[in-house]
Image (tube, rainbow, N blue to C red; front, side):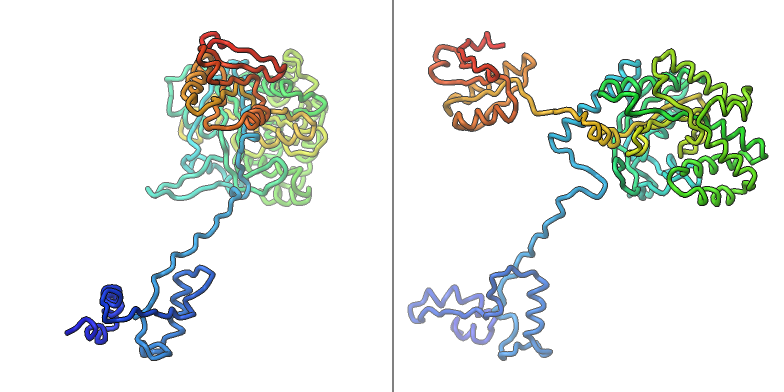
Length: 504
């Protein structure tokens, strides 16, 4: 059987053989094949588009509308188009391009320097922790804000919403090998799925300083002093920011007068923490739902409205721990030199259940921003995780709110890219020499932006201006033949030649 007869009997074989015999045998004239118009389009088509078109062009018997067997002349599938991704970061998160990264580095350097000045050691913990570490008591706002999931090992895990529970876990892990008191600090990324407002994001970085092993109020006084020192370093004064100070023991003493069970204390604190966020009638309804009497609620709200330590002492007396601790703290503030920064405010309780004593919040005196920082004493946190309790206190300080405050006060620093040197070869053959020059300068601790390609001098000078370079080092044939390089001081315009070994 001839190739031609074989092709006529089997159209699919015909499609395969045509390139072999139609154009190689002189007895047959070359043939042109018309591509159906439905396959000709300026627009790229997906597999689903082609499947739809083929289905509509073929009857139930598997034959096309023109009577031919379907598939004999089908074109190759078209590669599916690549869908463009959303280039914005997930809602509530941030990119840090170079200009923002410089600001973040500047801020973190101040956090670290203040911590160093106060004798604290830096620690860190995993961003991913066991979910159980952050689930303490029902009603805590943070419980409903967790980024949590089950990993591939069927373990419940969460992105940390704060750092203090991780600190407690590590202290329990280390046990008696730790020498008390501990003075630790950390700067870590935290995650909370919450409603975003100015200075509040779903991810943020937080500076924590904690002291463990000291029951005295001197620990709280030292922590507040460290925050004041930080504010002063960045240009914030007591007219810009203040601290509201109170004690959880104030609430305990009021509730004890009305025989409120101890197990309700945490729930009451969480409700009171909302006092500036929701209407007072809603506060009353929530307190009533916990079992507090109308009389107890009214007395509690009256005490919470007190802004004077003297007035609090008149109501509670001077014998209780709450008043004694607060009086000592205000006395210490005089010694530390920040008495003008702090004020008593009984309504401050903080929203986390683990606080047990003095609590404090840094606030914007103009009232435009949420709390800048906050902390307090948490003497019974470790036992909630199965460890032995250790007296402890600490604070958390977020990066987002303080940046907003600096913007508000016009105190954001100008942090431009700066390099000591730009090194450039004037000839392609001298690029290796330029690399040698750059290496020698870097070994001496100088920053160098090495031009890695052949560029005209006009481009190099523009680059020097953009990077705020102090000096331009040029490697040219004439100079290098003498073992020298050309130098230009960009601030003054001074130019000279110098031997490579003498270049400092």
